[in-house]
Image 1: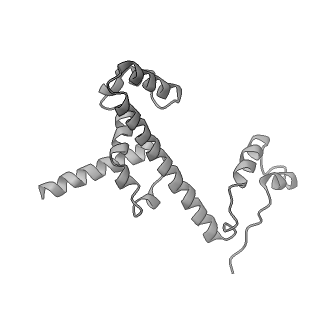
Image 2 (image 1 turned 180 degrees about the vertical axis):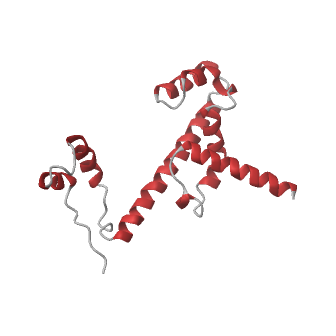
Image 3 (image 1 turned 90 degrees about the vertical axis):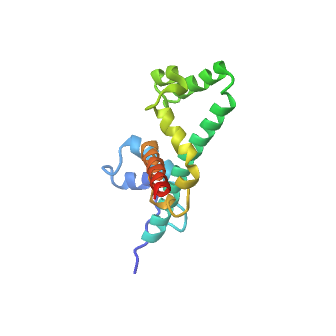
Length: 157
């Protein structure tokens, strides 16, 4: 029979075992503990909830790239606004200052990776692929490039 998880808050655990969490960890995990759903009281339920949150993270990563590139398209005829957008991405720690100054000309930049992800959002978010992905733009970019290579090989066959 599956063991049920004790849903005590991490702060209660920390109080009962002072070595369990440091003060910083206590505050962080206490907020995260509220994410646990009632269905996550079995190992299977925890695994399902984990997969759901991981897929949501990938969806958010891809969605943010799509939004960014829709914004770039919207400002493509307005260099000043486009530069403001790129500078805002520097402030958000998405692009380096050098990448923002290079604008859309950079070939091997973060921007080109994010563009590739946005271009292939439908493939990345496909229900048969999504469950196997981890959040992070470098992994998603490599998947988009793999898809392009497979498509190119398919066309040549």
